[in-house]
Picture 1 (cartoon, rainbow, N blue to C red):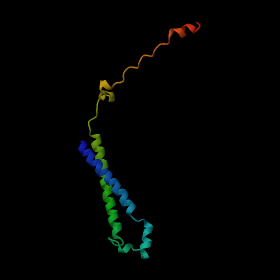
Picture 2 (tube, helix red, strand yellow):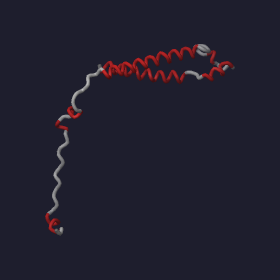
Picture 3 (cartoon, rainbow, N blue to C red):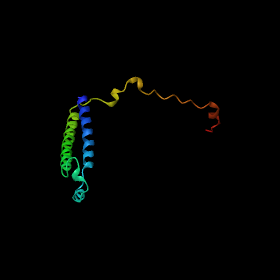
Length: 116
């Protein structure tokens, strides 16, 4: 189960980074006005509207992958057997701290000077 958890976690992180990257690559609504006056967007690899459709679809796919990996991570983490006992049960006895050292008593010469 640990290997499955690790694989899902790696895919989840990569999907999250991909979603952020794809969202930042997309043009806003106001960017279309510049394309109307010949800003060069029509000569791009996907055409004037092809890049918007491609990036939108890729973002939707990566968001779906992110959602599914979120569900998968929650299922895998909740299906692990619950540990019983205390956290301290795992601590070996040899690493337990030793008793504090005894505090030396004051010399008797000062004890005689204190009035009763």
